[in-house]
Length: 221
Image (tube, rainbow, N blue to C red; front, top):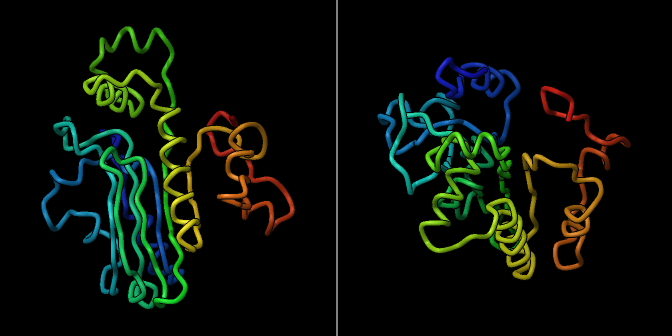
């Protein structure tokens, strides 16, 4: 559920973690600049109460917090109990585009990564925001523009993410990608890039259930 100010409510997630004995939670759009939160309300302390755990959060570290500590976008991941004992490394993109953990025994390693792809707002929305919009695409466009980069943040997201995954695959790591792609992953250019021989990813919902995943957008897109 989402609070009135747009920030995520973790109560329901915590209930599922405890009831289902979940090994790992990964999510997008928590809506917080975690650096602004007191320790007792940090991501690490609101889930998995009483469990051994490891956590990582990704948020836009380049901008000041907004009202009520909220910031559109972000990613986060937490592992619990036995799985947390096998976390070797963890990290996050400084724009909050993804968060990841490396888990394994030393001989075999798997990268768990959760990512959130931005959506470019319409021209009317961008014009009204006058360069100060809170949406994820606007945050990232502002960051890149301040550094003289004019490439669309959506293009940079996919280029950077797939380059990262490719580097992990080249090092011999397995990769599990959990993503809000904001576009169809079953066809088109994105599908081709994920299936590239240097990445070789297979969509697991379809593999397991024999059918494509349902549309997740509120309007069925």
